[in-house]
Image (cartoon, rainbow, N blue to C red; front, side, top):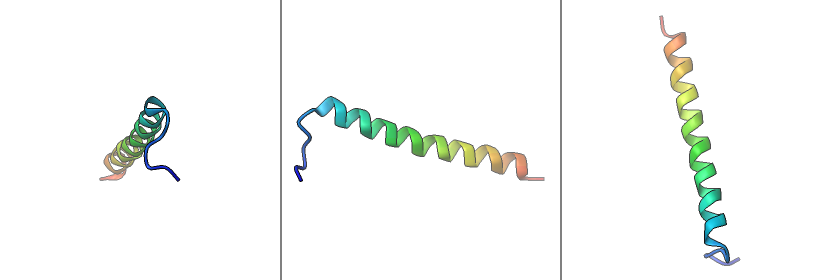
Length: 38
């Protein structure tokens, strides 16, 4: 299992998608918390 991927752009894209998904979940939780708060 190589540490570096043969295609750096592909690895970067994958990492960007993972980061984007984490950020999106964080934003959604924040919005729900704001709406749910009295």
